[in-house]
Each structure stands twice: as structure tokens, then as C-alpha cells.
Length: 362
Image 1 (cartoon, helix red, strand yellow):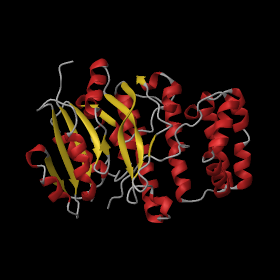
Image 2 (cartoon, one colour):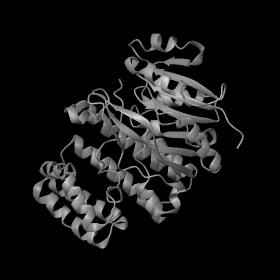
Image 3 (tube, one colour):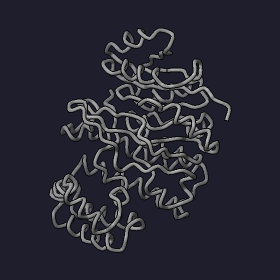
Image 4 (cartoon, helix red, strand yellow):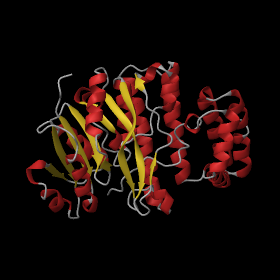
């Protein structure tokens, strides 16, 4: 593949205290002069973002727009990007050394791929601790061809993806009702639009801080409602895109994806509004039916006890006990020893230890 210009697209909203570090992590990449442009799209920040970006002069192209949310900022960035490949970064995160070179090499090795993606490290700003996402799974190929891939692809957000311009054109515009969770829409649509290539290396550091950790963890009811509403939009728009592009739900793999997406939205709804015992039972039952295709017979047997347990305990008590279990390294090791399966194989989307990050926006 002839070496193609890549655009580093940084979207930001009131992240002035972090944006310089993000830009520096991009400029430090091992790329030839003129091979990469740095484009910052400011979604109507009211802090000192503009002044901080201005320090970089002509090395960074800066676009400021009215506040419209994550999808609006990405749409503006995609329209302005000059590169044949566009790699994304949130302004409070960092690219690790060698990321761009590794991504370009993967595109060269897989010319059919419309998206290259990789995992990232969760970076606790307060403690300095970095943990590689244990649920990440690198897949290469056309995701809809295998139901196992349909059910395990994901756990990657904006900072872990790079897309060819042709793939972006197939999914544009991103629905601008997605003021957050825009990646929950376009990452999956891109995987249906073209083959993908996964990199097992962790090439981005995602900063966890008070403004971006999921707001329901801070008992912010309004933010939780907004997150659920955007999750609903993401699922609706995914399904609409699939219909427009001839993906019939009568196909087993497509039906599995649709069910998976609806379960994800339902889980977010529960975090916003406590479900009835009956609704929670139905969720756990449907979850087992869908993901049971990935599990051993022994594990399916164990999981069969969870829907009645969820009905008996209720959502809040069940979730408190599940979190205690998930946080116990000894119990997780015991499970792995008993069932001889890696934890990430038994932990599909919806039961991850860390959520996909979502920025706080107006």
C-alpha cells in the first residue's frame, strides 16, 4: 500500500487542561513529515481550549464550532479531514508511542479492512495506575460472517479506532442526536460496512477522571437519563442502517447482533431506572439464551440459576452481589480453574469491569 496521509482527529469539549498533552502524544508519533495532519475539533468549549491549542501554531489545524455533542463534532471532523485514514482521539486521552506506525502497518497488511482497532489502558488519574482492558478481543475479518465475532466484537471506543475514508462515507452522517455514545453507533456500523483488523497491542491510554466516568456512578439522575436516551438512539440508528443496507434480521448473525444491542440498551436503562423483578428476570433469561452459544455446557448450567436468583433478589441486591464477586480475584481464579475458559470469553459486552468512556457534554 502506498503510504497514505493520516488525519489525527481530536474532538474536545472543555478539556483545556488535558488537550495539550493529547496533542503532544500525537506529534510525538514516529511518522514522516507531511504524512500526518493533526485536526482538533472544538465542540463549543467555554474554557481555555482555544488558547492552549494555539500554542502549537501551524502544526495543528483548529476548528471551533457551536456545541452540538460528540456526533456533531465527529461529523465536522470527518468532513474537514484530509487524510485517507482518520484516527480518533479524545482530548483527555493519550496515544502511546508507536501507535500510528502500528495502525498504518495493519492497514497495509489488510488492504480490505475499512477499520483498524485496538485495545487501551484504563488510566486512573488519581492513582496513576494503568490497567489493560481485560475484556478486549482483537478480531480480523468480516464480523457478520461468524456469530462468535458478532457477540464478542467491541469494547472499543473513539480512541481505539482508525477508519478509511471510504468506510466513513458509508456510515455518514453520524446521527447528531448522539450527544454522547456516538462511538456505540459508528464502531459497529463500520464493522458491518467493511472487514476490520484488530491489533492485540494496547496503543492508547484512556484517562479516568471525575468529568468522564459514567455519571450514574455519581448518582447524577439527569446524566443517567441522557445516557439511556442516547443508547436508545444508537440502537435505533444501528438497526435502521442495517435495514437500509440489506442486512435482514432473518439471518442468524444479524438477529444475534440486534438482540445483543437491545440487551445493552436495556442494561443501561436498568442503571437509570430500577427494573421490576419480572423485567430483570426476562433480561437475564434473554442474556443466557444469546451468549450461551459461547459458553461450555457446565457454565450454561451455572448461568441457568441466575434468572431465578435475579427474580428472587431483585436488581439492586443482585448487582451488589455480582460486583462483590467480580471484584474478588480469588473467586475469578476459581471460576477459571473450574471451567478452563479465560474470563474474557465468559464476559461478553454488558458485564465488563470498566465501561466505555463517555464525555460529559452540554
